[in-house]
Image 1 (cartoon, rainbow, N blue to C red):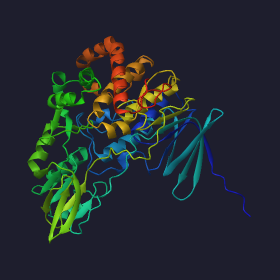
Image 2 (image 1 turned 135 degrees about the vertical axis):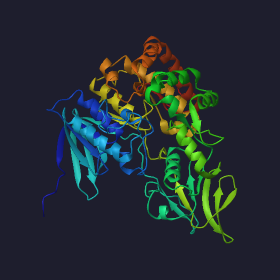
Image 3 (image 1 turned 120 degrees about the horizontal axis):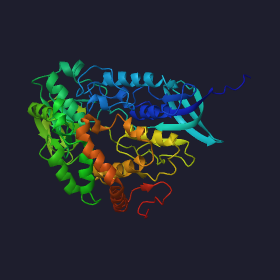
Length: 495
């Protein structure tokens, strides 16, 4: 009988699970406190660095100018204009560059193609178990663990449809600029009205002029207007509103109950939209030029929700949630662009930090900021400063909020950000904020930023109390988890 095969055990100072933008920012933060004598182990189920960018559709581009999509303050080497929206390949190359730069400060060992299974804390060590597709197992013993799941995004599958005369595809498995769909002259029906749908429509309209492109937009989506939020070139000196100013305006208007009025104001003041009705907002960004190109190139726009495509009585029809139908040409292409912010039911609640402070979890059930990159950066710093157990950050259940109150969702996040950044500011060295290259305000010259900085320093304590009351109102109103760790967090209970 052969001896039992035990999995190899690797040791390190920090183990990070997830090599996307959240994990890289956590890695950057960790590297500020470690040296070449320390080791970080980076684990990801994908074959390389990049997180969702490894899987996402090939024609995707950044929402924001590329310099602000990075790890910490690591500069891009792309050599493009600052306003350039980087492509998938360019983002992945930059992610690799970020790890290469961080390796100059700390050892980084990568384990790609490994699925995280579990962790156990004992005697000051976190024991992490992972497995590979071929059955191999790995054990990592670390002093600290950061689980950088972020939004947990997975590729979109094609929609299940009844018709045998229609091609059902997904952008993640079908590049609309090439192959059979490019060779076909049949109409295209894009299902969805968010950023994926806009990218797909824009790509089809610009690469295949004259192609019939149609959009099924649900209740419509609006976006932050990139031209006024992040103006290009020298216009940054005199036009646009720095994002911190927009956040301040929003947070002062929202009281936890009036999201409809706040949405009307934000859409009219800072928004851009393709459809007459536009009720959905998930923090996406779009320029007026992109909007005009898409609008001019669309053949048909349906304000309804797609249910199925069926063959009956010799015709092929789209069936919508309202019960209405639309006859379409056989051979048409139906593209699932319903978006990626779909929170699966299996995402169990996990606090953003364990009782010992040795495990940080960046996930959708205990979010402390608006974007995973920011959570990785600031939670990483707070972890190494041993501040996580003493700073009363509010966590919020993104998943429950998005499901129960989709209209309120973005405005609650603005309140959460204002509240928690105020607490973080009081508890970290100034270099933490100075080295935050993710800060959208840094798109503007310093003279344009100074009023916002001064306003924040003078008012953030008072504003924090207001945002705390707003968040408590949201918790009780929607019956969701929203409050500081250690407080009573049963939905509906007072914090």
